Amino acid sequence: MSILEALNGQHGMMPEHYKHISTAEMEQRVAALKEKFGKRLLIPGHHYQKDEVIQFADITGDSLQLAQQSALNTEAEYIVFCGVHFMAETADMLTSKGQTVILPDMRAGCSMADMANIMQTERAWQELQTLFGDTILPLTYVNSTAEIKAFVGRNGGATVTSSNASKIVDWALKQKQRILFLPDQHLGRNTAYDLGVPLEQMAVWDPHENRLLTDQEPETIKVILWKGHCSVHEKFTVENVLRQRDLDPEVRIIVHPECAHEVVQLADCAGSTKFIIETIRNVAPGTKWAVGTEMNLVQRIIREHPEQHIVSLNPDMCPCLTMNRIDLPHLLWSLESIDQGEPAGIVKVSAHIQREAVMALDKMLHIV
Image 1: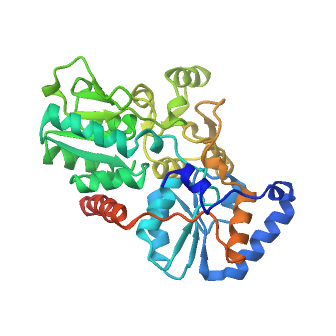
Image 2 (image 1 turned 120 degrees about the vertical axis):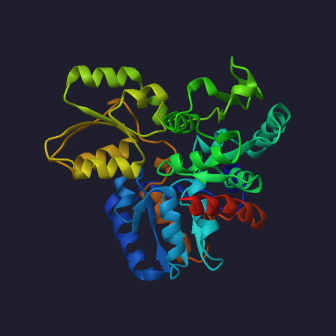
């Protein structure tokens, strides 16, 4: 189901009066509802969420980690997922039938996930099969819709995370001559390059033009990258890196692999959100860092590590706008809707999509 369909359906929009409640009152009401529900309620909070929401999270982490932890918490009847739509979909697919997954604001999507819809992907697959035959294995970043995960599952592929992408891409390239990597071209390019695939053996698939963008002979291509990106991480530039190094030659640059290839190559290190958090946590006090990832997380890392000198790689960066749709008023409305017996924002993946999508998730977990 698309976000537009959800908004037009039974899920509805938050009533206007929630925007005019004081922060103190909202915090008091959320805390009271959490106590009332007890173990029947679980609030997972993604790393990129606002502090006003994270303060009430029972668990924090990356998207797949939160979905897996939600599945393990069998006592929770309601899982109010503070993240974005594809994350709530994954949580719904992994949890039991007796659990209800709720997204506090159904407009909280992901621009990257939205860059690959199922119609575009099926059309691309037909063209690629004509061009390359049965030589391609599809992979998708977990930052994708349930429909895209299902497409990958029924075509023998697997999902990947930013933590395990290297293992999964390496596995896939041993299964077939080529891979199709959805929907983030940067993670796919950076991962394949680290595994020794030269840039000349990679090409971008443009879903709008429905064609392969390359000057190379098609038979030389090993990695087909979907033309998608993270609207946050793509804003970190080579100029940002050079400026930080000019300001302080001692600064170390650490970035997420969703950043452009040129930025990752200039950085001192690159890795998943977990990698970034743990790297900074484990270094000696007084180390200087410029961090290339989402601003809410960077600001939280700065507060949690006053012993370090930490700045954003791009000081003009804004937080993820869609992730920030989940705020304190929406969290309160979500909990009060449950309390009134009319939960809003229920995320439910259909059985046939769930079955095939879980195939792709299970294949990944089996490989790693």
